[in-house]
Image (cartoon, rainbow, N blue to C red; front, side, top):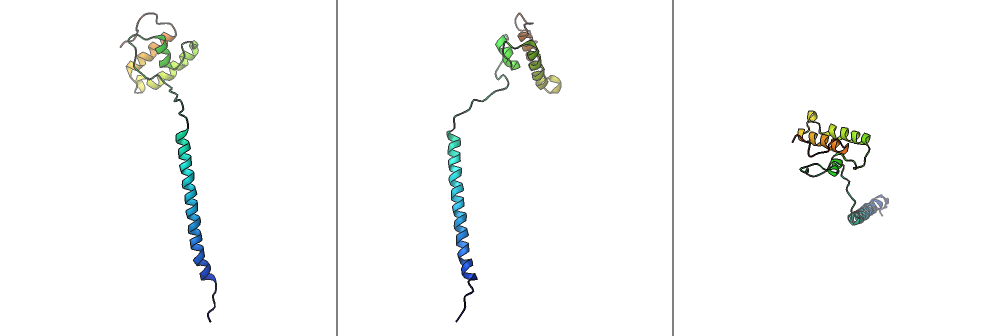
Length: 125
């Protein structure tokens, strides 16, 4: 008679058990991923905030266009306009790789919003 130690019988049963647990975990992870993706796709679209004016320039700058270029409203106080001008000018200054044309438009926008520019376009371009 042979005696069974029981070790080989136990190890033969553990492998399928681990494989079954791994398969169940993969199935639950896949199910969760699919549901998360469907919830992500079904969410309502959010408005995208644009920080700077996007678009071409008008032949003669208007107060609205000047405010859009500087990123302020038309009724912004003078000190806020100066801050906005400085911020936009630092990002687009010709000495740091910016364009002379854009710098002149930014300066023109500042003049227009501060009501220094009464006539037509004061741009050099």
